[in-house]
View 1: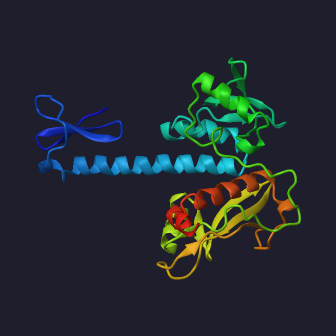
View 2: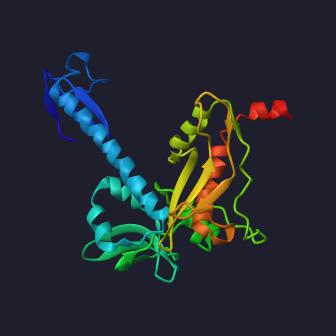
View 3: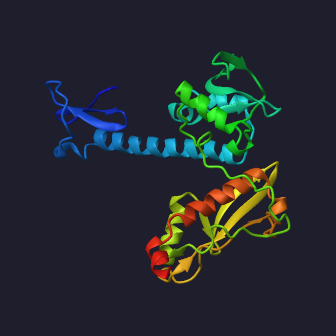
Length: 284
């Protein structure tokens, strides 16, 4: 932490916050108002805002790799690893081999030595694959066991992988059906509340639908839930969940892969959870 002069004081960044000390070196509880507009203070605050945005973007990028099951070149990971924001987003993620078998939990990425992992025996190992696979949790066969092992190791994933909610397509599902009604009919007093919830959860709203885009086995798929497209103050309700191809054509449920299914159901459930329960109870 380096101190910078600001008027009669010195300021610095400490754990993402601007801190201040006086000429005697005593740390103050807050930054005095008279130096709030000092260039040094303003610069540090702008740097803090940038770092926060950078952390959010790194985490969003990593979660996009997970939800799209995108293999990442080893060189990319080793280049970004020294950055604390990237490292925090990547640390402890489960890495699998080309065969889908779990290789271990990511602890290091070095240009010379490759990836450092903690394997399922608790040992530290090194691997150097050309492409690093960070799988979506629905693709991990022993997810429950991995979760237990992660707790034993004290693993804390910042990116949502092991403890992400997953949905598996039911075995007896009608493969020719075109939509899922399980989370349809969730009422909201005003359309803007449902749109706001979709945005807050990280989903785009387009053409009256909340949209979740997934890339699975090289094929783009969109999960869509109707959320309304009229007066923002009118009542609305969640519609059925459907999936479409890049051209907007509806897919049959049998054509939806496991990642697209899980992410679509996750979106639909999260939107439905914000419904007006009091209205439902009165209606009942």
